[in-house]
Length: 262
Image 1 (spheres, helix red, strand yellow):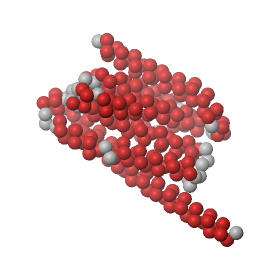
Image 2: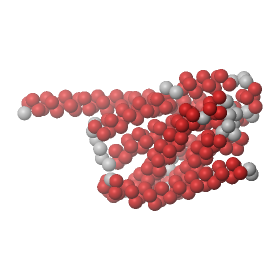
Image 3: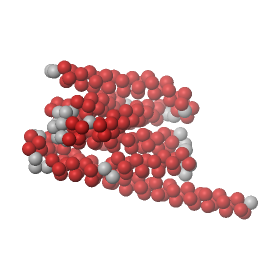
Image 4: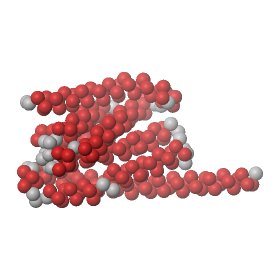
């Protein structure tokens, strides 16, 4: 194992241990000080709260690193299939450590947060990341997919508001819902043309055929499948956002009418 591969292994293990520490120590200590509502939660809700807190931290760190690579890593942008994957490997290594940590937490606290969908999602992601960490291929596309992490904090915040008892028509909930819909659209839907145009630009090239058939299949099938789900989720988010906004508008109208009556 070369020196850089050893470094990536250290990053992966460090990431795993850090996210375990954040889940078991940091979040349980910080959360009740940040929100008194944490103490009123059931034990299973506290487990999910800590899990989502760690998820949000991971999303922010990896998301901004991903954005930096997309903007400033010329090697990866110029050769999306076989460009120098150094920075991408570091980012994917951190994500891999997080995914393994989260899988362990899901299995250990299955009754509280067990979800077959997340298990399948994490395992599929780990399989795809093998080609990046193990063979250094497709760095641009692997990193590009991490842009989706920017939508995670708003999704988690919606759950936090729900367990804390915030009405769906409350201003914080509405603001978060609109932000979630906007960010989800930007990082998962609006970027599709750019992603698939880069995929099409390398299709059939020598670099493309240097990727083994199983790697090409995993890349293309996972991309299309994930984006089908993204479109379905975007539809649900947009409908939910529209319903909440309509409900809030009706509530405001009723409030004004009651005020006039009084």
